[in-house]
Amino acid sequence: MKKTFTKEERLCSRRKIDSLFHSSSSFIVYPFRVVFLVGAIQPTSAPVQVILSVSKRRFKRAHDRNRIKRLMREVYRLQKNEILYEEVNKLSLHLDMAIQYVGKEELSYELLFVKMNKTLKQLVHEISS
RNA sequence: GAAGCAAACUGGUUCUAUCGCUGUCCUGUAAUGGGAGAGAGGAAAGUCCGGGCAACAUAGAGCGACACGCUUCCUAACGGGAAGGAUACCUUUGGGUAGACAGAAAGUGCCACAGAGAAUAUACCGCCUUACUUUAAUGUAGGGUAAGGGUGAAAACGUGAGGUAAGAGCUCACGGUCUUGUAUGGUGACAUACAUUACGGUAAACCUCGUGUGUUGAAAAACCAAAUAGGUUGUGAGAAUCAAGGGCUGCUCGUCUUUUUCUUUUCGGAGAACUCACAAUGGGUAGGUUGAUGGAGCUUGUGCGUGAGUGCAAGCCUAGAUAAAUGAUAGAAAUCCUUACUUAAGGAUACAGAACCCGGCUUAUAAGGUUUGCUUCUUUU
Image (cartoon, rainbow, N blue to C red; front, side, top):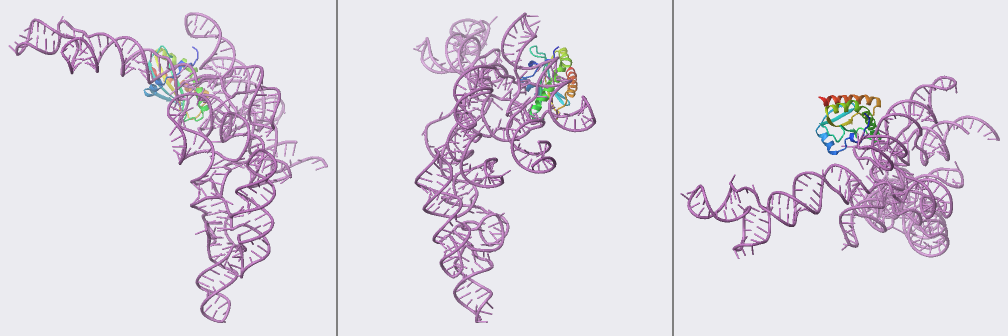
C-alpha cells in the first residue's frame, strides 16, 4: 500500500470537527495529544480522517508552526498504514481524530518518529478495547 | 596599505536520490491510473498611511470630531517620493546631517529649582531723593530708579553717546531679530535693497487659520443549490354510509335529512378557517462556483527629464491554498569560522511563511559585496 496523505484522509468538515471535540475520548503520549471518535464504517470516505494541529499559543511564529506540522505529517504518513489502517479495516470502523502538538519546543525528526510509533500503537490498543 | 568598530546601500546558497503535498495541461481504463510542467518573500511581517474593488448610506448648509501643515514637481492616490528654500547643528569651508518646518503681532493658560522679581514687571543689596530724630554720621518712615550686584534655561533687544537728582528706547547713532509695504531676481518657497512697525519663551498647552475626510471591509459581495422541515400565494378536493350530527319520540328501534366546520343569506350563492394534493414563489443550513490572481504587471532597448518619473517599441505570463499545498529524509557542493598545520576534523548558513490585489512607510535580517566615518598600526615623501 502506498504511503499517501491525500485530502480524503484529512478532516475538513467543520461539523465533524465540532462533534469530534465535543464528544470524544483522548490520551497523551508526550509530545502528542490524541483526540479520537470511533464510528461506523463509511464507504465513501477514507477509514481514518485526521487533523494535525500546533497551538498558536505555544509557537508564535508561523514558520515554526509550519515546520512542526510538516514533521508531524511526515511521521504520521510513513507509519499509519502498517499500524493503524490494518486494525481499523479489520474491525471495520471509521475513525475521526486530531493529533495536537503539546510540546514546548521543536524536537528532532528521529525522536518524533519514535513517539508517533508509540502513539499509534496506543491508539490501536484504545480502539480495539 | 592593513586591521578593527559603526552606519547606509546591496544581498537573500546550489545540486542529486527516495518518499510525499496543491493546482494546471496531455493521456488511458470497466475501475484504480500514467506522463509533462509549475508551486513563498525582500520584507510574504507590523496592519501604520493611500488607492482599486464591493455593499450600504447620501437634498443643502453649519457645528463638532479626526488627520495633515515651507515651495515646485512626480503619482491613480498618499501622511510616500524627487528637486529646491529657510532654520538648527557639525565642518577639512568643498560640503554634510536633522525634522509635526502655518500662527506667540487674536485671546486664555503655563514657565520647576534658584532668585527681590518669571510678565497690567519686580525694589533684596545698591543708587538718588523727601520727612523725622540728631551737631553730624547712623537710624526710622515714604517716594523715585532696572545703570550695577547676585539667581536662573530665560531678567524686558545689544553697544556707545546724549539726557537725568539718580536712571530708563526717554532721545539719537550703529547693529540684531521681526511685521507690513515697495522695487528687483526667481514658476514658487524665498533672496537682496529701501522705508516702516514691534521687541521673553512655550502651539508635542488650550486655541486660531488653511486643506481634507460618508460608513464598513474579501468573515465585503454575487450566483448555484440536493435531501428534509417550515413560510407565502394560487388552483383543486373534502374520510368514515357497518359513521357522525340534526328532526320526528319520554326512551329504544325505525325512518327522514345533511355530509369538513363556522358566519351570513329565502334560495342560488358568498366569505373566513382547517386538512390534503399539485404548482409557483421567497428565505435559511451543509456544500459548491465566482470574487481570486493579466496587473496603476515584469524584462530589455530607446527618447525626454537634474531627479522622482514618464513616452514609445519588442518580448514574457510568473503561486493561488481554504482546518489552509509549496515538504521530509539522506548525501554532495559552495561560502565563512575554529582547531590542527597542508588537507583533514568540527561547526555555522540569518530574518522569517502568501490568504482579494496594488503603491508606500516602519520594523527584523547570517555570510559575502560596495560606500562613508572613526580608531590603531605600517610604508613612502
